[in-house]
Structures are given as structure tokens and as C-alpha cells.
Length: 335
View 1 (cartoon, rainbow, N blue to C red):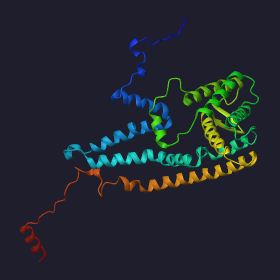
View 2 (cartoon, helix red, strand yellow):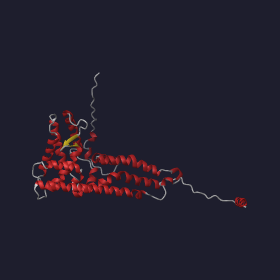
View 3 (spheres, rainbow, N blue to C red):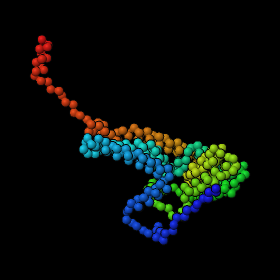
View 4 (cartoon, rainbow, N blue to C red):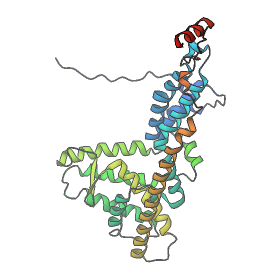
């Protein structure tokens, strides 16, 4: 018996026409859900981490704290709930967000290269030294850099050249479209803003590029154990992460190159020496910040000398009274 696949087409509804163009400024539960879905789509790992930590750990533990010994107290255990909320808010996301905040600030102050791993920077330096073109021409340098990377990564690949060309096109689009926010406020607001239907999506583009890369690697018998990896300057990189690093790097490089008076070779060496120093500084600041944060966490969430979870269970010790008869008996025994 042959099983045929069925294609399901969503029924057409006239009342959905131009529904996105209808403006509704009144807050509603639907608007909250839309904003949350945009947050998940635009935020990537950050949004997923926040959602899991908030709804999977912080919320239930906080509720458990508020209702601890509720039947004994006759009311909510406010101290226990408050302590649980502060502890979960600080200790969970804090491990991730303190270093992230410092590295993000470093990226805004020092340049986006501060977000790139120092080992990756060393390899990008090797590639850039062999890239032709005028360093003051940002578009030319970016295209030539991507071409150099692609030539290196797919040297000796004999099959799937059309897919390789498409990966190169996507790589160029990612480099051109991935612009950094001018401020943290702009970045935060962008998390909840729905993108235009025809807007270029870096997340979807990199996913498509990795699917194409998987087909290319399989066709050529390369990287079978990890088909989303490319090899550049002798090192393996996950394609989506590498695109992000190259985008950050080229954005910073071309911005500073436009203002330099040095020749190409001198500028490239100076830029990378400065980038490595700034990256090490940013790492030290991130580690120091996290260490300091971990030291003060207990002081931040402590709500009192006693453990709030014991409220309602504590009993006041009573001093046993000694009767006059017992006192007389004790005196007689000592005679």
C-alpha cells in the first residue's frame, strides 16, 4: 500500500484581510501575547532563557514561598515569598545577564569587535591580511572578506556549487543587514516590535544557510559528524555563530577604517592589537562583575535574621514552673 502525503491549506477568511493594518491602541490580552511572541522570535537565546527561567523556575518557586505555612499563619507568608522572588530574580538570570550586560556595554563603548571571541579574532586577522580592496570602501571590503572566507571554507568541494553560491549570497546579506542598535533602549524596544512581512530576517537566513551547508557537506563527505560547521583558516566554526562574529567584526573594522590615516597593512595590525586588548579587558570586567555580584547576592535577598520558611511553625519555649511542694521535697532530700 502506498501512503501519499497530504497537504493542508489553511481556509481562507475574508475577515482577515488587512488585519495587520488595523490599528488598536487599546491594551488587551491579545496584544500582550503578540508582543510576547515577537519577543521570542526577535530575542533568540536571550528570550528563551528568560521564558524558561521566569515561568519554569522563578514563578512557581515564588508562589510556593508565599503559600508556605499559609494554613498555620492564616495569611500569606510575605517574607518567604519576597525572599524567594529576589533570590530567583538575582541568582538565576544574574549568572547570565551580569556578564552579558558588561560585554554589551563594552560593545557599545569599544566597538562590536568586543563581542567576538579572542581566538576567532586571531583567525579573522589572518583572513583580513589577504583581503584585497580599499579599506575605506566598506562595501568592497565586506564583499571581498566574505568571498575570501567562502573560497577558503569550500576549497576542494566539487559538488553542490549552487548551494555554496547561495550560502555566499546569504552571508553577504547578513553582513549588510545586521546593524547594531545605537542604544540599549533601541535594542530592548526592538525585541517587542513586529518586523515587516518582507523584512530581511537574519535568524531565518542563517537557518537557511545552515540547511544548505548540511546538504553541501553531505554531498562532499565533509564534516559528517557536524554538518553545520565550516572550516576557515584551519579552525571549525558553526556557520550561524561565525556569520554573527564576522558581521560584528566587519561593522567595527570598516567604521574605524574610514577614519584612519594609516596604510592598509599598518591599520589592520593596529586594529587587531587594540581589539585583542579590549576583548581581554572586557572579559576581566565581566568576570570581576560576576564575582562581585555573587558575593552580594545573599545580602540582597536576606529579609531577616530568622528563616522565613519557619514562620507559623515556631513555638515559644515555656519555662516550667516549680511548685512549693517540689521545692520542699528538694530541700528535704538535700538534708
